[in-house]
Structures are given as structure tokens and as C-alpha cells.
Amino acid sequence: MATLSLRMRDDLKAKAQELASQQGVSLNSYINATLAATISQAETLAMMGNRLSSIDQEQLHSRVLKFMSRTRSGTEPKLSEIERAIGRKPKS
Image (cartoon, rainbow, N blue to C red; front, side, top):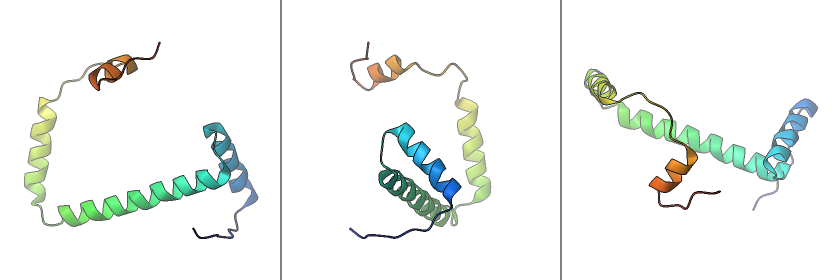
């Protein structure tokens, strides 16, 4: 594992420390997780961009609209309903 010395504005560090504290993790763990998520997002967007570059945009738009026309609005499921659906025992 690499060691990195990082310069950071004081206000940014304070905010990052506060967020890390709220999540119950160290600043180091928070920065690692945030950086990993940012890199993953960038890689996913690049991969999707590559995959979508060869797709007929009109056809894709038509398919999305067709899919959206089949969806129904409603209330969001409760946590207990989600847990039951995935086979977890709901928490009391």
C-alpha cells in the first residue's frame, strides 16, 4: 500500500473530518472510500460512453420511452418490505 502526503485546504479537511466522523470512520478511510467511488464512477461513465457510442440514439430513446410507459408510479417500499423480498429477516 502506498503512502501519500496530501496538501489540503484547512476548511476542506475540517469538512472531510466531520463527514468521516458522522460515518464512524477515520479520515484516511473516508478519503480512500471517496476516491474509490469517484474513480469507479469515472470508469463506469467511460465504459457506458463507449458502449453507447455505437448505439442508434433514436432507437435507444424509443426503447427508453417504451419502458417508461410501462412503469407505474406508487409509494416507495418500506425497509421491511425490501428485506422480506430479498429473504432477510426484518429488524424489529
